[in-house]
Length: 176
Image 1 (tube, rainbow, N blue to C red):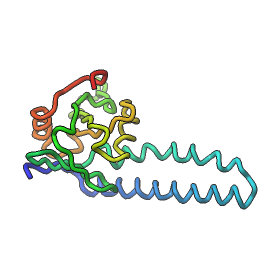
Image 2: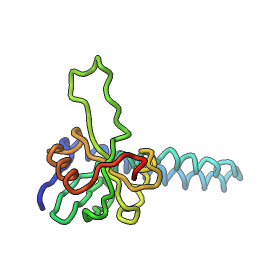
Image 3: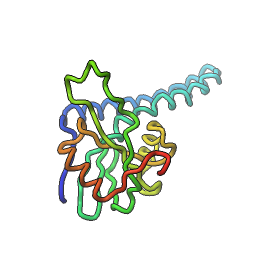
Image 4: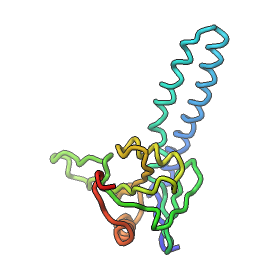
């Protein structure tokens, strides 16, 4: 192991992860409740609500998988999202780093604090599980698996960014 880059506030990260998992579990329970209600009350329209319910739960994947903890090894990295199992990637599996599309710069009057900056890392489609594809969908990259690093969500961000820049080319969204 070369370095370990985790969330600076472990309690907050853990709490957000638990709340996201509880909401995902609630979505599953609500799905069964809607199916049971549709059968018990002969109300087939309740089944129409299920896709909308699942659609509203998609942003929960951002909370658990957008900023995973990153452990850097000589031959690649290991990602540890909260609520899902860890994934190991070689440097060849990472296609590019791109601009972070989910961060916007603060207005000029609010420059009293350091603005959040970061990059998104695009990975080969077969290298990461499905929940990273959901992150890519929410980030505007289609079904490409993506995760991100930023100065507010990873310790030693500058070192981690330098490691990625030395191993992975930086590209624009339309070139990936």
